[in-house]
Length: 162
Image 1 (cartoon, rainbow, N blue to C red):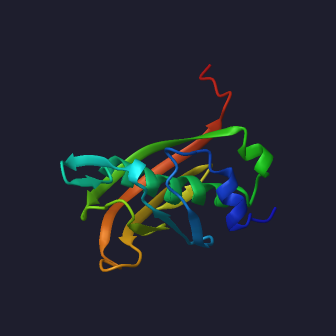
Image 2: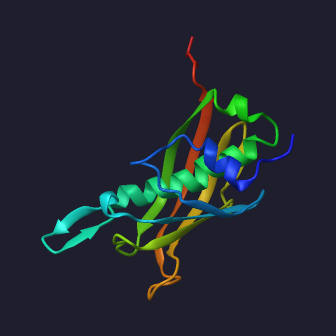
């Protein structure tokens, strides 16, 4: 089987608005994925009477959607069909050394890069990746927002532990 194109991968990501934080996949291959998202007003919470910010759990969710969900779909499609993937459900299973380093506001565009790094791998529908989110454009272009190691796995939707 051949891996799917970026647009086909986006169509298979199960998360939808208001909890989908992937606008586009910019680069994609066996060794990395780069995706981007522009944060919207409704994604943010009021942190004070004058400022709204993106909650850190949504940054982690974005990192997982790009670095585990989308990239794992890509890796799996090298051996299973898109129809088979639709019968799987993905789980975010672990975060290590996660650190938020900058505040993100509505309108900020960020890019998430996931690689295998030193600890990562893809095996048996499980993917461990090193992810980094940076500002993409604007005065903070290139500044790191989040870094961590994330893991996720996919199992059949009708999985039972019998």
